[in-house]
Image (cartoon, rainbow over all chains, first blue to last red; front, side, top):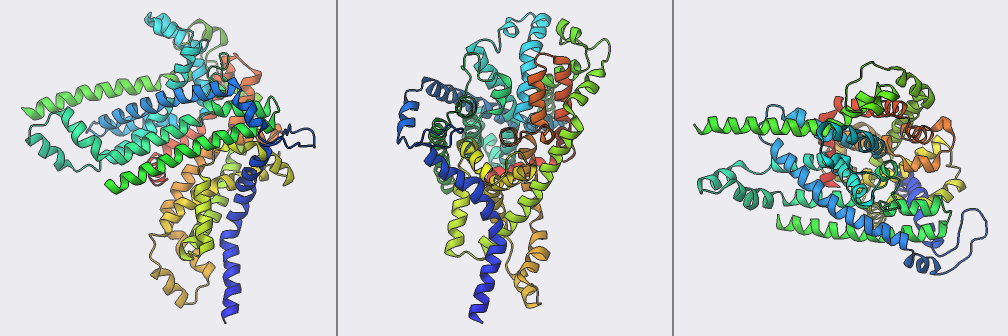
Length: 293
Length: 277
């Protein structure tokens, strides 16, 4: 009985866990392990001979200015996009939790950009920046619209920020709405009776009460911005002069246009380490919030 | 008195919110209006309404892109990947919860930890693995890749949900002579429905919109999904905005319709998925 049931258990284990484990091993675990190995070689994808070069790639990338420029761009972009996307999403949520007649329609509108893929959004905005803004400049006479939006490093940076905020704000709005509707109404009533102003209520009640949602919003925006790729590929292609090249795009270019696959994997590992670090800080932070709440 | 002032304030807020929403929609206005203009008219004034509707843009872009084929490919890969992901991850998560052996706990930790890995950091060696296992340039290969990349988050979400299902229901079914597989397919899987809806929605948005993975994996034109054919269309017809905008409108229409018809489920699903994830 015992041995019969144990072989049956293994059969069930294989049936239930096997398929998921198999695809995961081939598609995620194996490439990850191979990446660690290839980052120490001069692999170029063409020749079958792969030479072990130790930490050579990491020395090369340490002095690769393009790579660090892309890190610099990604860091600046992430900082600005995280703050603005959350601020806009939170403001929208504050407005749309009031009893407005059109609030359901408005929520749908603000969320809409999110379901469209980054690649297509980038192309749509390319048209807006190149042709649409020029036309709006003619109509309104505002010099804001007549800037060389995608042609200059500073404005191209802001162009990427605008598209990211426009896309992500609705998503964070939904998270903030869910959290805001859970704040008990009697807290506000008690505060009003005590004579608290609306600004005081915002900073003393609302924000402390929705802290878990703020943590989620900050880290979601952080992980989107840090890994951003599709939008930049279709909006600016990293230009002008690589000024809007994100780390993800730099890795892509290194591997699939320069064919430096070994160097590309080394960069990819550095990228992974940074993302893993950010995520670990996130988990640590979220856990701490939960204890306090 | 206070209530009247309150509603006047609300009206102002409502008007401001509507104006803000219209500003949010401006890109779609430009997109739609210019997609039915002639090229000359787009250059003249892209903010104006069209003087004459040029539907030809659509019919030409439709043919050049071979839109029905791209649409079919996107639907096919999204549907089969969703079915596959739902089946294998719900089974795996169920086993992990009900048999928390040391091995299973270790495997679960491994899946959760892998959620950290960004796609770009393993895409290069993935191409190598793809050629070993014959996954390149085939829809079956793309399907296997989506299973692999989708499994960690799907298992994680199912895992949390299975824990909330009381085990007593299953025990009574076993007493009635139900096999372990029968318990799962007839009792547990139907109970997972709310989480299945969430997972299918999250995975559909991801797979439908994904560009990088299929662009690396697929070479043949016949296999291209909507993002891939839009991308190559743009490469060929750079600055031919009349055709390009019509192609973009066609490209976003299916997912916008999907969103508008299921918006309540989608928004709930996304909230549930991101709060737990």
